[in-house]
Length: 392
Image 1: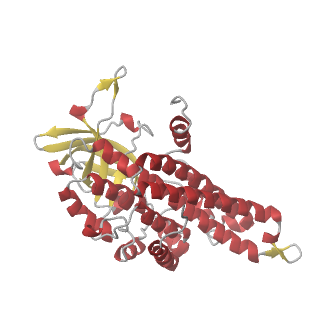
Image 2: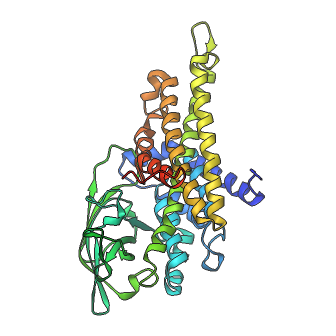
Image 3: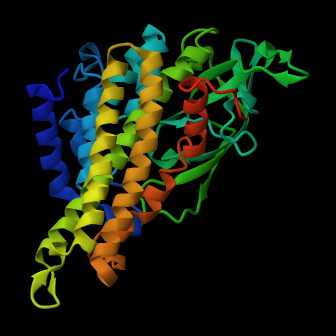
C-alpha cells in the first residue's frame, strides 16, 4: 500500500500549484464580481497541458488518468481558484468521448480538450426529473438520417463558455413501458453545438460567487446529424456511467482543495492575530481545536478521493463508484466545515471580502447538493454497501 504520489504526479502538483498561486483567490473573486470568466487562467493551464492530463498522448494529451486530473482540480482550488469547467469538460465530456465515442469523434474532439481550446459542457439534470435520471424527458427521435432533440435541462454549467454541450436524452423509439407504465431509461448522449438552431439558454441567477454561470436549456426540435450521437445506439448507458465517477471524484477534489485553502487562510490569521494580553488567538483551544478538527476532516476526505481515483484508473469501476460517492460526500462535508470554521476564527473579518473566506460560502454549500445530494449518496451506500432495501 503506497500513499505517495509518483515523481511525475508530484511535479504536476507543484507546477499547477505555482500557476494557481500566480492568479489566486483575488483574481477569482474579481472575475466573478465583474461577470467575467477566468479565461486567462484556463488558457494558460491549457497551454501548459494541465487541462489535458487525462487525454491519451495520441490526441495531444498527457496520457495520465483521473488521478492526474484530480491533482489539477485540487491544486487550483487550494489556491482559491476552483474551476467547475474542469469537471464538466475534461472530466465528464472528454472521458465519455474518449471511452465511448467513435474514432472520428475522438479525433475531432480530444485534441481540443487536450490544449483547452475546446470546451464541452454536460447536460443531464431536468426540472421534473431532479436526481432521478431514469425519468428523463428529453427525447431524441429519428428524422431520416438526422436526429431531432427536444426537452429541457437545468443547472447546466458554463454553456456561455462552451462550443458544445453533451446532452443526455432518451431515444423515443427505444423506450419501453415496464412496472405499471413507468419508462425504463434507454439513454443516448448527443454532442450539440451551443449555437444550434432550436437551442435556447436562459441564465439562472445564483447566490454563489463564481465566474462560471448556470443555465436553463430549451431544446425545440434541435436538428443534429447522425454522427452527433456518441458511439453507437447501444453506447448510451455505458457512456453515461463512464462520466459519472470522474464527475464525483473531481468535484470532491475541488471541495478538498477549497477546504485546504480556507484552513490555510485561517491558520495564517490565527497564528498572527493577537488580542487579550498579546497571545495569538491560535494559542487558545477554543480557536485551535475547531480548526484542527476541520483540517482532519479535509485530510480524511483526500484519502478517499485518491483511493477513488486510483480505483477508477485501475478499471475497477464498481469499487470506484462506491469510493467516488463516499469521497464526494466526505469532501462536501469537510469543505463546508472548513469554510465555516475559517470564517468563525476570523471573527467579523471572516465576513469581509478582503479576508477571502466568506466568498466561498455559496460554493461549498452547493457542494452538499450537487452534482448528487448527500441524501442520495447515503441512499446509495445504505443499499449497495450495507445491503439495505431500496428506500426511494
